[in-house]
Amino acid sequence: MEPSLYTIDGIIILDNDGKRLIGKYYQNSTMSLKEQKAFEKKIFEKTKKRDDEILLLDGVTICYKSNVDLIFYVVGNSEENELLLAAVLNCVYDAISLILRKNVEKRALYHHLENVFLAIDEIIDDGIIMEIDPNNVYNRLAIRSEDIPLSETNLSQFLERAKEEVKWSFFK
Figure 1 (cartoon, rainbow, N blue to C red):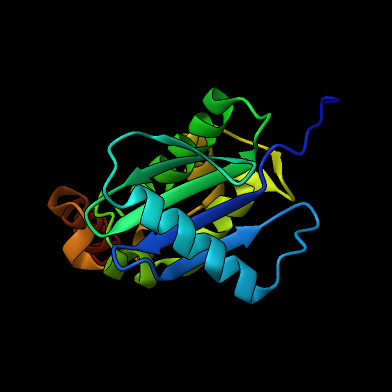
Figure 2: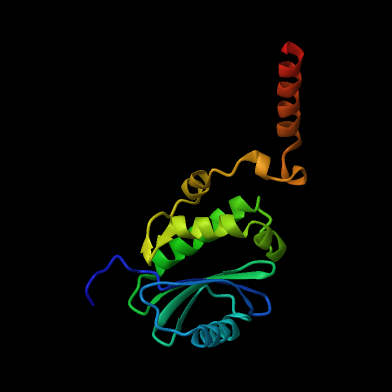
């Protein structure tokens, strides 16, 4: 097989019932929506009760990681390096963890879905790996602290911001 930059065939995030939350397929994916759903159901059935992290299935290599109510998958062809796929999986998971303030669960994912899609696009572009450092991905998203609800912000950050506002209002 000839080397290629196109290493990722898909990124999939399923809930703990096997329903798709995010599914991005790359490299001229010829699978119809019905075939994608069947593939996702098949990998979910194979991975839901397993503890390993790599699966070879139907000519593809799949790295996956499960969390409380989410399962993250990175799909590559059967010739692909598992360590590279695992690095991408870890980057996706860690970047999403940063976006969700370490609250990686289905409800929080839905709340920040647009940032999750942007993070995946920063990591992979049409199957080509662009970044594997989750901190770089998070910093490129430029999520402002004003976009985070108060319940998720640090109390000291809130107090610092309040002090600055009081100082400025005093000088006006």
